[in-house]
Amino acid sequence: MALYSEKVMDHFRNPRNVGVIEDANGIGEVGNAKCGDIMKMYLKIENDIVTDVKFETFGCGSAIASSSMATEMIKGKPLSEVRELTNKAVAEALDGLPDYKMHCSVLAEEAIKSALEDYEKRKSEEN
Amino acid sequence: MIYADNAATTKMSDAAIDAMVACMKENYGNPSSLYVVGQKAKEVLEDAREEVVKAIGADNFREIIFTSGGSEADNQALRTAAEIGKKNGKMHIISSAFEHHAILHTLKRLEKEGFEITLLDVHENGLIKPEEVAAAIREDTCLVTIMYANNEIGTIQPIREIGAICREKKVLFHTDAVQAVGHIKVNVKDDNIDMLSASAHKFHGPKGTGFLYVRKGIPITNLIEGGAQERGKRAGTENVPGIVATSVALTEAIENLEKNAEITKVKRDRLIAGLKEIPHSAINGDETNRLPGNVNFCFEGIEGESLLLLLDDKGIQASSGSACTSGSLDPSHVLLAIGRVHDVAHGSLRLTINEETTDEDVEYIIKSVKEVVEYLRSFSPIWRDLVAGKKQFIL
Image (cartoon, rainbow over all chains, first blue to last red; front, side, top):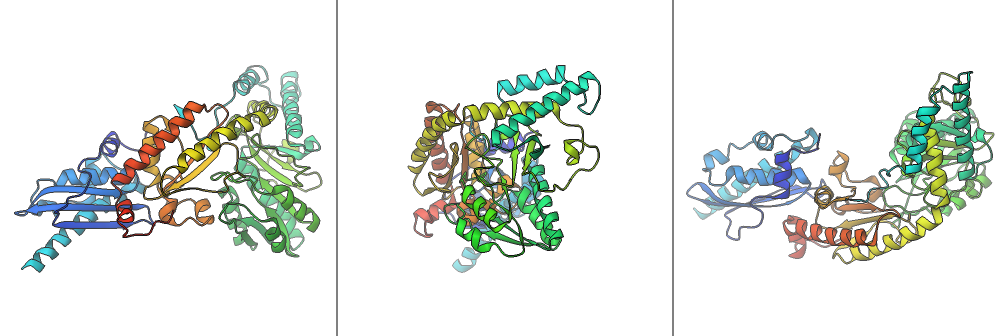
């Protein structure tokens, strides 16, 4: 059996939503280089809907695939739904991850949560 | 497909495969049996042993124990030295920080049993200094164990000098020569070696076979108790086909050693020159004093596993010292031992080529690695920070 599912390999080889959003209003970065994974999420939120999302990742195949899948799962979704996204849902959508790679999906969830916090903070500062 | 992971394992040579198959078909007897088929198997087994004796410059057949591979040989060598040490009240062992885990984990175990372990610095170039070995030897040192050539960065240690120091100070000297035997000249006598471990699948022989050389006069400790095979030093019916194939592969490798090393070195150096063109990269380990086929680099801003997967998509098989390829959070202990920081060690690539690697292969590897590194950097948040000056380049 291969290390990764077809889905993981597909998202790794052809990552969706790669890049930067210049006018993002929510940015989150999690992980550290020491452990070998860093994820950065850029959100563009309008009327409580994630209208655009992009990511940058330094990490292994499953880290890149998890970021890519997570962005697909939240794009165009209302914040109420985005807040509910779990790492488990990301891993399941990828048809599973090896046990020792589950932390990659955790990072994806945390990156999105961190970007949402940044968005809330900016909003409260505006008011 | 370009197989560039020969330090992980090699493809078996045709001669070794043929010898193995012929042995399985014709000499299927148990070497311990008295009848003709058994004795025939015993004969080919002992012929194979003689070949190994010749290949490493040993004195006689009693000095070779066939094992299941390099790890078992390492374990047995260390246990042997530890037992002798215990008897003489000498409980200090010297080794290096970047040994194979078969050595390091056994040393950890011996430490729990009361031994004191000194791990020598391997310096930035991945080379141990003989004078530091000499300085570390104490009255109670029972063993010095230093690998012949490193499995990740390929650096070749000053084994002959270290051996001479140990001989002079009357301390046992073991070397894990798994990466060296069949690739560079190894001679247990010239190199002042007391014990040596080797593994067949690293020199185009089969997996699951290897041997331990123990200089005559050194009392060997068993790991596996049972029958009287291997002069009672390693029980279990001998892996005759594997052993025969090992001797064939080894003899072949030694016969062609100089020629193959010359051919391979030229390609290795071209590969190194090509990869050096990648900005913010660095070679790991001394550039010239390394195995003929070993190339190991770090590329800043990327992670090794994704690099390997994308190279595999391009038909290139290589390996990395990143944490993700080891299943732990820490990158390679070898890269950390030569002073690479975690951030950079995660982005390592090991290419181990051989005489069959063509010039076209080398150019294709250089082109592919350049493309993949550039691509992965294009969406690496670390690379972005480095380029933007928010972080300092290390390489």
